[in-house]
Length: 103
Image (cartoon, rainbow, N blue to C red; front, side, top):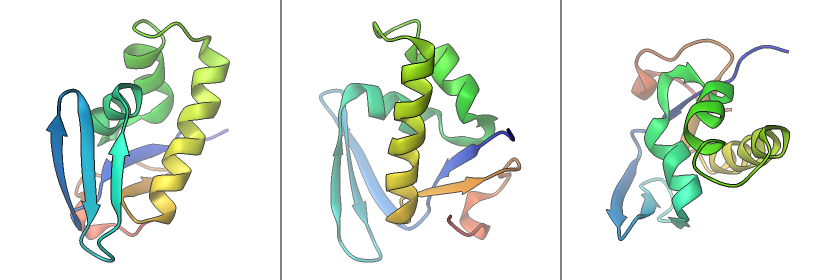
């Protein structure tokens, strides 16, 4: 299985309000409200750190969740935001997310 790299799209507006991230798509004005766990993944989405490492380092030690469950849930979350073009997803590092396409 290859690594999954994620980066925040440049076509969004985002603000952290009380530990939860509010994200609006500039493409269709869709509004997303991320819970603290999803916010942790969002904030770590630098395009250079594999999703597996993000979950292992930022989710499993902080939240009471087993790693296989956390990995599966994170992959589903990333897929959902990628469908809405909120996250850029690649099987290779994403050095400049604004120039990449979404999956």
